[in-house]
Image (cartoon, rainbow, N blue to C red; front, side):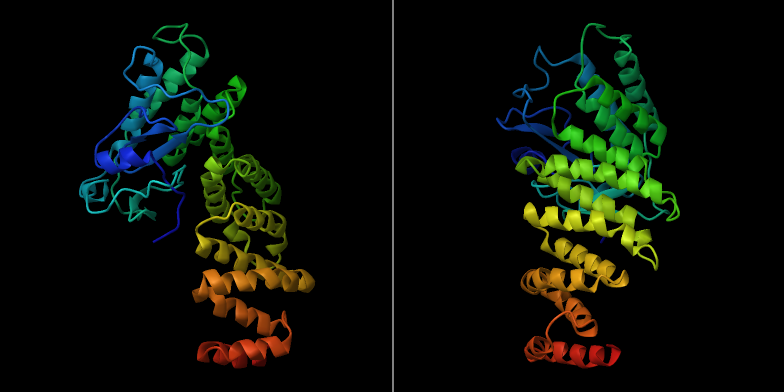
Length: 362
């Protein structure tokens, strides 16, 4: 099962209404309601500058907001035949309430709290007409030509929600235009600013490893999202999501002659995940190992040894199944004192065998 961006919703809504299609906002004091559309739950927590919640359906709820949310919900709620068991309330439980899902580049569904990528042969029906309708409503309203009340404004969040949905449905032009409109209106600073940067990053992903300039531009957008989110604990989920999406983009650069391009950004991401105390310690360990490999592949032996001094104890304590991998690198590249390594190998037969094999490769 592949690792994917997280999904979070209002805990009480997820517990009591799993399996029900919701469009709107809960009345709980600090959480803007989740709206569930079969596969995904979006958490919209209040941030600095955001107003107190209002329940949808009350007299002050904007008609424009309601219509747009309904169209976006329709756009992503359609699934192919035979897939109903994978919706909330079906064969798999709803996602853990502490997670927030952002755009996944390929079709995906939640299973046991994780995103699983659908194979190319899996039939998926998507309501492109609903996305087009939502986009047209947003665009006309942005030009002051709303078919509803022309004086009524709508939430800038909807620019980003539409952009995310367009990305998933393979319509980058729509996504790019929505993000352009979002930044032009200069809405309040909320989690949607970080999500907009994530959309931009995916839109400018390099088409090949030869496009180093595109890679750098893409990394800049991911780092904008990360630097924005790391200062507010309620937005830490964006740090995790950015790290997952970044790594999907960066993996093709793991080849001879290209590792050095990853070191500046990957080292920052590893550092921020540590700073925010990311709960998925296996993911942190995985990125640590990749960063160590980048140091070694580029001949940065001193940096590798210094990094190992903190990475090895972390991996041993929090991801022991990966420790043999870093131990092998420490032996082969002499990143730790030999006496310490010999002492370490005595703790298990597996490490002892690993030590002997990698001493031959050293």
